[in-house]
Image (cartoon, rainbow, N blue to C red; front, side, top):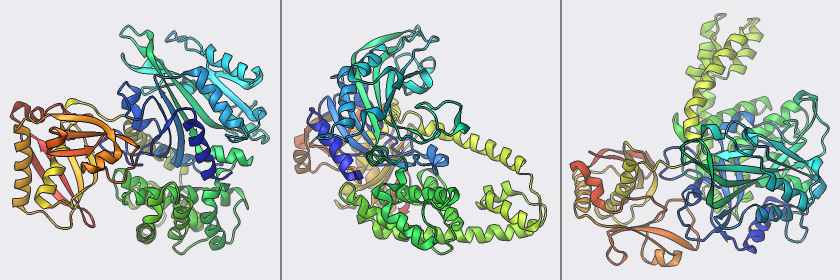
Length: 602
């Protein structure tokens, strides 16, 4: 099967079982300062998993664009990617284990409605319990798997690090009030010979590549009490996630996900430009995989409005591009190639994500520009390397000039200079540990900050957008935002610098609406009805048939109406608590035709 077939079969399968299909959230989460990227289908649904009613009901299904920056170093094997699609289905207090596990097994094995995989190729894992927290083993899932037909020898049990989920990690780290529960993973056995480098015995969680995880059902079953014990939730949730690319590879019986259809056009470009066929040798294959993965991710990022920079999402994008250039060099490709590689992804995803193909020219221009700039970086790094003569500081070249360490090592060898690579690697480990420690705060959990001040800024953001439209014109629309407890930031479509008078007028309007003590009201309605009301849409987002809108003032006489999932204050006067006033701190260019405002309540 191809990716489109598998995606459609999955959505159709669960639609027939009462699930509403919801659209993929943007790859860059809006109004969520805790995470740079959407990394799973669950992430945008956390408020609903915590109890907020979803406008589409208690059974949901979708395919979510996802990106995990922490997996960059893993890319190069047959199954790891940074960008991927996560197939997901959810029960919000409706069905539970006895429905979820048989349904997923049926989807995997049914030839009529599912993927037609051989049941003999499937192994499963369950939760073995945790003595420290007193959590019992998940015997119920084991029983269900046996009833389905999975024999004992293909049912494995692991502890909290493998088969337990909570936002905080293992049970001992969960704070009081946190929800979590056991999970059950399904692995596909591709039948590859075991690689003894990864241990004496092969098993589902072995990293040799024989077993590949294709789905994980999380059962949010417990809430932690103040005394450290766990209590069963009155309404239990199911959160399933399955890698679309891995499932597609399983239908083909080939464990290499880079041989599925969405990579075909890009792989052909590398074949032609390098003169080396994919699979020629381990090094060539690794370089191919890194370029294919990184350029697919870069295409979606660029199409979503991200641009290369030295901070946040832009830094991750730049890192993907520069790693790809280095790998292209290893393949013997010295001319610009990345734009040509990326071009094929627009067509590959045209039916599911047409915005990528629509941004083809932008993607091409940005990749060509970044590739040219990095080749200048390499030239500058070579100049500094020459100055160092025999006293070469590879770590300095990398951190200051972006000059790849492996390239420094190659050049030093050519000169007959012996580098202390152990010392360099030690510095790199320390450097990466610091980077990961900082990034962990961004990537852990994927929850938006719902602190009181952040919620106030979220509501102020709505007031600001409407005020901008009144002052600058109705063609002004949001093009991105970032909201923390310290300030709000909005990117909006406007082609010139705002005057001091315009900024003062915007501030005046926002503060007037705060003083008017207007109610902030959430309403669930049909998407078409919201569109007729002129509700402002989130840039790049698609919406289900039933949506939530927030209005400042009653719908029939509202100051602003926006598609939004919340949270918000209940009245605008809450923004002025303590005599605070809305104030624009800075107005500047963000990108071509887009301005940026940073504002505070003080």
